[in-house]
Image (cartoon, rainbow, N blue to C red; front, side):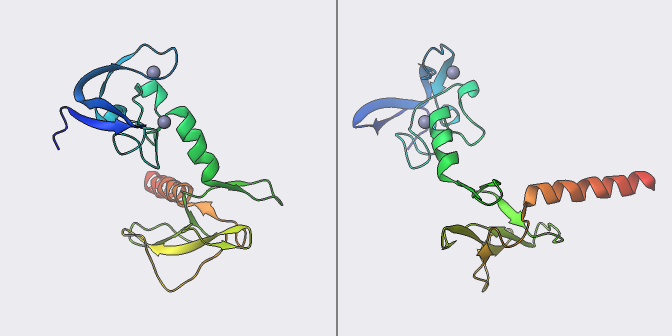
Length: 167
Ligand SMILES: [Zn+2]
Ligand SMILES: [Zn+2]
């Protein structure tokens, strides 16, 4: 399949897509000119998939996750869990580390793989960079004060920089 222009089915309707096909952002009221290339697509597959509706949107109306606002909101709700005891909301697409564990590019991070302990999502250690699970079946996300791996990595980087500047 060439990417310049091709036809796809979207909601049972045949449409022209591809980066040579000129279009206007499909957000109501937005008139930004775009094309129907993958860069403007909501979701990952032209025509729509489980990630998005297959609409085409300008950069202002696509999230960093390549979704339009309604699809992004739906995905956020489907992928988040709020601890009724603490009110903390976890994004289940994030990678986490228990307190005191360092982030290493080839180390372990804890990830939600779809398993639960009762109502509570579980996190399972997976090995970077392939994110392959080991033998550990994981623990409920409320077991430790999990932090996102991104937060831990950022703090580590700051600590290294501070150490260097002190000489
Ligand atoms: Zn969408
Ligand atoms: Zn727009």
